[in-house]
Length: 250
Image (cartoon, rainbow, N blue to C red; front, top):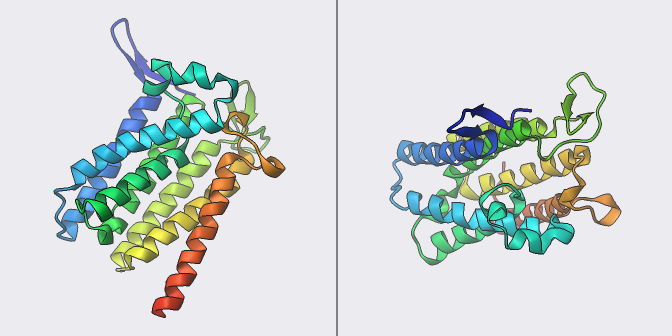
């Protein structure tokens, strides 16, 4: 693990905030590139990313407090180091950020919802970069592993689950780009992204070893339960729109 990339008497460069910044920066500039490539007005893009960043940050923290803080909830709630530092749940950021996006696009009309598909690759690739930051920091670690690609983390040889997820997200990002270049519909790409990421996340969670994320029914994690809900939701959406508009989703 490499939680500190560089340090001297005046400055310390931590890997987690560095890769988080790279994730958001890459996602923003990739989205901006796709908007420019398809000659779409991007004047609302900066406001979208700023608002999404703030709302996703709050959502990721709220989900962590509710699902993962256990008996330390009040300790974290009033601590500046928590709100300004680590302790995130991706699905919390996804839900809160998604809600802000719906308000920004559908209610305030600051950006066209029909262009959502051009944002999806940036989300996938940015998320992958963030997981590399998790890998370097040693958080979100895996269960004990005896396979050749095991890594040493938290006092044991474990699955590199952060890299499992990063690789799956990179593949998903390229798939989303391919669908864009093939002119797949906005609806297809959104639902494909939700379905495939949720499925991958559900599977990868079986190899996670950090019980702080919360374990519930039949030892399913919080993220697995949310993944199941999103899988069902995306499948129902696909079925509804396919039946209503009689169009192939693929």
